[in-house]
Length: 278
Image (cartoon, rainbow, N blue to C red; front, side, top):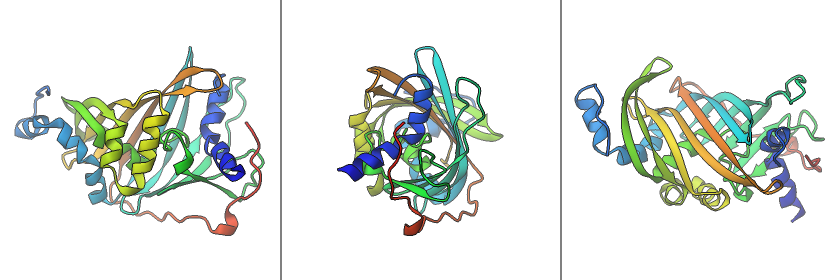
């Protein structure tokens, strides 16, 4: 039990750091011809296949941002790195915002995303700089959709397997790429049922842990069905302040097929000591 409490405290590190700063512990037809007609024909089915299209792509670079709002205060956490969809592993550098006093930014946190686990380096709170903290994502009530300060790109894609309603908005561009824009609402419980084996548990946990299992989203797919940008809006209850925190998580994917070399830490490099509170 002590070990599980330690992991939960570590897992909340990134979000807790930012939450602490703010004082809270059918389908429209667009222009574009027959391709758009097919896209708008069954938007829900198209979105259910978006995660599979990423696996076919193999890998990509990723940029993420996570905005948290409570009352009139908003903070943003940003990340950047690579992800390999075939092995469900990624590496991101995560930047926390300045504190309210305008002090210098925190050191970047390196995060490794893997099936069932989140590894963090430069975690702070008493953890040596050369050590990793490992978090069992199966213990997280949000399924690691929020805890790490970024949403695992493949997990973000699998949320779309729970799309219950979706509208084809039309064609546009994202970072110079021609895309189709969809808007809808996903149900995390349904997403868990259709997800890959590694993500069934996290999505089911999130369905219970968030204030609601309904997740509004906007997603932009290229002509190969790959996600170029997806924005989810989550809502969770902050236990300490007994308020609801709104979270908007945005993931931008590009440079598909890029080489990746994500390696998990060796056992001796994983910190086993006490994690400081806060």
